Image 1 (tube, helix red, strand yellow):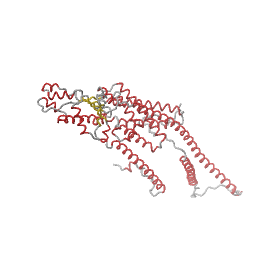
Image 2 (cartoon, one colour):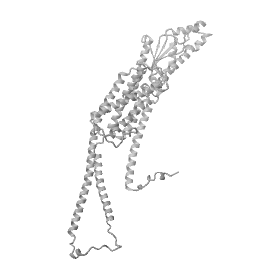
Image 3 (cartoon, one colour):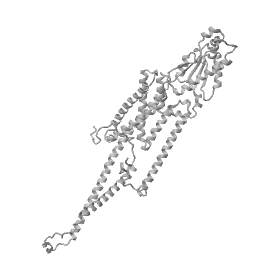
Image 4 (cartoon, one colour):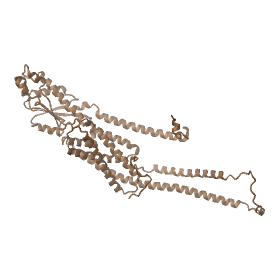
Length: 536
């Protein structure tokens, strides 16, 4: 097998030693830059890890912020058993059960509205006359026990589409645990009252006095539900960032900022970004619906979800464009990952189970689009549109405004850059011409001095015939002299151009630097790179 030196013979050819002064300076600059970026990135990711972990910190201790309303339409022993069970379960890791009078919620439809409008995360109610029917089943003999309906006792209302990973345990699971504890409290005597003995079919009723009924506004049990507010958001953000880099690559390749009117650039970029995010959001919602696994979502909800994701995607496209305009190149990747983490953290958990500081997430587009999508999926049972849509549109307007200003900024500096390139080329050309003119002038002066100082040849010398040099005599070394002269001229010209380049670099450092954004190569561009057609 050939060695690496055989495969790549020029890899280590003509390398400078580490003791070389040039390498010492380069080594110092390298480690300084590496150390600075090392520190920036470590602090950035440490901060992001702390931010996202802080939103999940002691999550169970915030479960008590989830409110569940209890309405006892029965007013009997079953309600007493639930109250007794809640007294034993009440803790920071258990939802807060708030009891309201039946006059506050005259019908179960009012409870539905309270949960739908997110006044409460869930509602538990005892059916009217449930305690009496249970008492009759325990004391009325076999016929009464057989006729007893366990499903017409306790019912809870909830919306699984609203953060399903959280409400499954914090709402549904907690209510089930509460009713199980209430069953034990009832059967051990807290609710049985004057019942002294139970036998026959009534024993099964006492062992299982009720079956908790679930009224789920929007069942959301498919496996993909767990990534709607995490991976989906991340992929949408990255999708916009990478296409922005592609667009910037096209503008850099064809030098459009220095050739087209800024207003036309704004219009074209806006239309391209609209079309890209339009199709991209269609693909996202299409994939969600393709793997919905029986999820009860109709065509109207598909279109509305598509539109919401379209607005979200375009908002982030403009936001990333702003980052690339006004931030330096080293900070663009940092801004991307920071924006992703901030947005995902704003939707990874409901604010009720996160520390209060994280309500700053109301500002981020991901939180707003998830509230809109939840409202659409649960058929209006998450009425947060009053703030979610205005915030998203505010991001859209702000992004479009600053992005448009950025186009003028880029066009301005692109023109200055082309002027600078022309000026720098002229400076190098002038320096080379000046050197050549100076050299020719010196040679002319030298030839003139030689002619003046050369003595006139004697007539005898003129009359003497020309004789060839004797054989064996060496010819004048004109070739060697010409090579030395050419090498000397190259060195002098290189020194002059190097001094011009140094002055130009110093001027560049003192002038503002404009960032044209991340620019990616175009792997699917089959046009000839050498073609430079006129842009009309």
